[in-house]
Length: 100
Image (cartoon, rainbow, N blue to C red):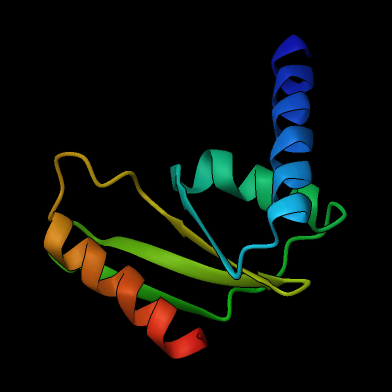
């Protein structure tokens, strides 16, 4: 229960920062466990369908998903440390280019 309360406080702060800064893109290098909970939180406890999912590392099955909530595109992906960073960057940049 304390962990959930701590997460909700973090999510509240992140949401406020996004509302203040109004970015077009937010990249979440958190994997789906943390990021899905955040996406649910900022979307009123309803999980949206991703606009698309890109597998950026066929060997290990790493992928990213793109969600649009209000006017912000959220890119959810694994943290790149120790992974094929070039492939990861290319996938993210392709999303920036496609939805700019």
